[in-house]
Image 1 (tube, protein in one colour):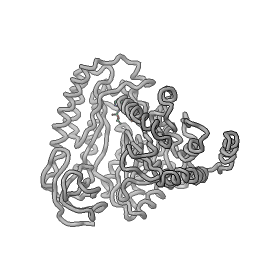
Image 2 (tube, helix red, strand yellow; image 1 turned 90 degrees about the vertical axis):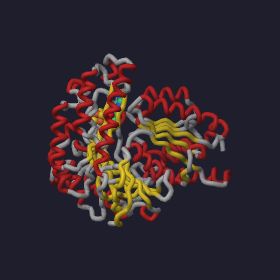
Image 3 (cartoon, protein in one colour; image 1 turned 90 degrees about the horizontal axis):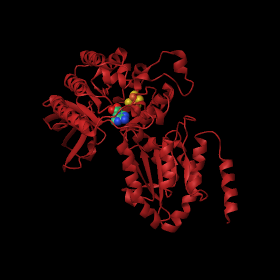
Image 4 (tube, helix red, strand yellow; image 1 turned 30 degrees about the vertical axis):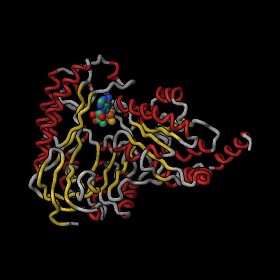
Length: 496
Ligand code: 5AD
Ligand code: SF4
């Protein structure tokens, strides 16, 4: 077959594809399935894939969708990246070191790609939403087969078809804004007993340091109907714990993706209403959510958590800084005092709640006094866990244009904050020692033979003697020993 014929054939096939989704992607999954037949005949096995995920829970959940599509096509999951015929990096760009990691990986794959003409590399996710990065990949990493972004990852099969059909050596498609919302594509969940569920996409907050609003677009909420339908299906399949996902779940409902009868009947429907409805689903035992922006966390939400035992007693409440001056420069829209008052309101109604946070050190203009404010907040809020980051300059954000601090000064401040964080978190998270807590068992312990590992509702890990039969079950565990950020315990009685 000459190239011209291939061209006609491919364009014809693409022209035959249904226009509506998800039918269009299902069509391309079938077409890709036909194209990998050749690989199977030549190599005597189905091609394998490995998806490497960087960054947050959102990305992890997107990867489950990519894996669902690949398995539907007929790919099998490789145990390690080095054994995979198709390697996909689902990238993060929230901090610069995530970018560097990707380039390191790509460099090391070049040789494999030269030795094996079947090998394919795909890159997707937040980093690909930056045009200068896509340009750089086009120029410096010509061997990359597939590049796509956050708004069209549901099109994996279609893009893969264009590459597999041989016409294009590098398929690049990145959209500047979301085109459509596609529901009901296959997804392969990492765990069958717990799952993330997107309730909204994007962010409207434009914190001055943050790239997320630029790479994930404006806030779009899924309808309650779509969310509840997905959770019902997950529960029918054996899921007992759900994590509702959004960059800022407390502004759920600002802008819906589709028409909704529930919203028509109640235009005020908000995140606490959604949580209430989710909790009504029979068979669902534990509900988590993330992330909450402190400026939007309402008293109504605190009340709904207090009234619903299914909702985990954990709130991730990123403070970023304890200094009102820096918070203003960050465009966070709350002050130190607002934040501490919120902590008080939460603790008054949820005395056993675990608060977790994100802290950033080194934002432009931050002084030692500002750092002291951050330390004050850490001590006052008594977090169970804190993710502490060094500010990373992101091109295109307002903070990138501000005068930056010296590396030494920032590192020094970072170490100061980290020390207090470590001390207070270890002390706070140890407060349950000697109590019996319900734990959802997640898997066998990798390091201790005969032990399993699970999570309490406040997300703290517990390791205790047990076997495979406990995975996916809730058990009551006596927390014998606090080890800083985890516990060692023993089963008291299987409760559910
Ligand atoms: N530099 C460092 N950390 C950042 N984060 C977001 N943007 C940056 C940045 N430019 C952190 C914030 C956020 C978390 C997900 O990542 O703390 O809450
Ligand atoms: Fe970034 Fe702020 Fe949006 Fe969080 S709320 S994703 S930190 S812009």
